[in-house]
Image 1 (cartoon, rainbow, N blue to C red):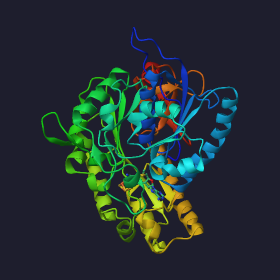
Image 2: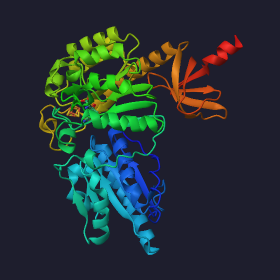
Image 3: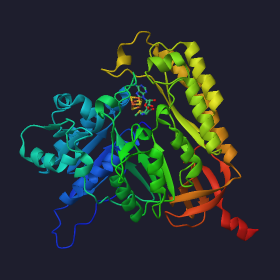
Image 4: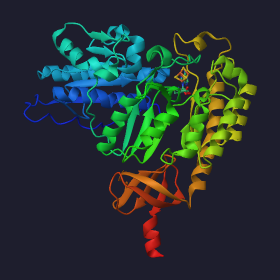
Length: 470
Ligand code: SAM
Ligand code: SF4
């Protein structure tokens, strides 16, 4: 969860009759959540018509974008060490007469703005998550301007209206941002400050993007939002739809075999959404529903707006609606004021729910957030002890869940080839990586029997081979 860096699909080919722009290379490094992965793909889409093609190598990149995460201190610091290395690359390229544009995007850019160019004057562009639709203009200004271009405002125009309609093919699994920002102001979190107020894209725009993703080969669509289940969008019939209705519409799109959504807040799990889990077959039996703590006192200090009991009730109702539902969560240990009794309450909640996976973090003070000035800081050593204890239980629960899947025949979405020759790799309905010997095209949904739970994946056999052999 802390980092994901990697290739993104090539941009669309230039339209017939339009002279291609001279080839330039673009490197995007992405940290943080899936929303940043989505944003990186969209930035590549915007820059493709300017002639920028993807590269993995900083040495050959004419433009480098660091798409950053500010959620924990470590994530921000990594950006500055990367910038230090890029300074040397930029110098070496300049000595060969090659220009390099360096841009810092995302939440660190939003939070630190001009501080970035003060610390790293070789940065040309600083852009917040709400301004990346203006990238082409910023690149042009950066090439002309003597100083850096800094755009970290929250512009009145909707960035989604200014993004190219065409999206590069993303493969069988595609992300689609439907909601941004957050009005919940949890004590520890920078998101309301870096991503701004809650905003829901209109249903028609989401449905159009989903149809296009499906036409480009997407079989699984993951809807994204900092508070995705708070989505309340204008609908084509003039009403406001909530997420359950949107999911029902998306499920009708030909080719869309699987739907997911992340990340959700317990307070926004409405009755219709809970029912949708039992009613929409393509809605995967998997939900990431962060609880953060099992102590009501800490939940109040965190300003989460719910008690542990609400979370337990939600889990029970979701499992009633969809008995094979796997729940995953986020936890923070060592929030200011958390005592060992509070931590024990978190451990009890974990035992009561039984998670299929989780992310857990030590509380990290973020400047400007309310928790940073709350009394009762927890010592680092104590945070370490609590995190280890929590992770041991969560790891055991994840292993138990994976082992309980062995023997089941499940649909696996094929996403590529396995590590060994003759293998296919894919993912189960519960997002577990699965590999099996055999052949199947990428994007196929294949019935497989899960055979063994390995530390980070499940091995399987193709179910049709089983029946052929029987
Ligand atoms: N919106 C989601 C929610 O309400 O649960 C979470 C979004 S946040 C990007 C992802 C996770 O990072 C949080 O669930 C929390 O566990 C963790 N996190 C956020 N701020 C943190 C901080 N200051 N210290 C440690 N972990 C933090
Ligand atoms: Fe951050 Fe809380 Fe909003 Fe999630 S709900 S993004 S943790 S403020």
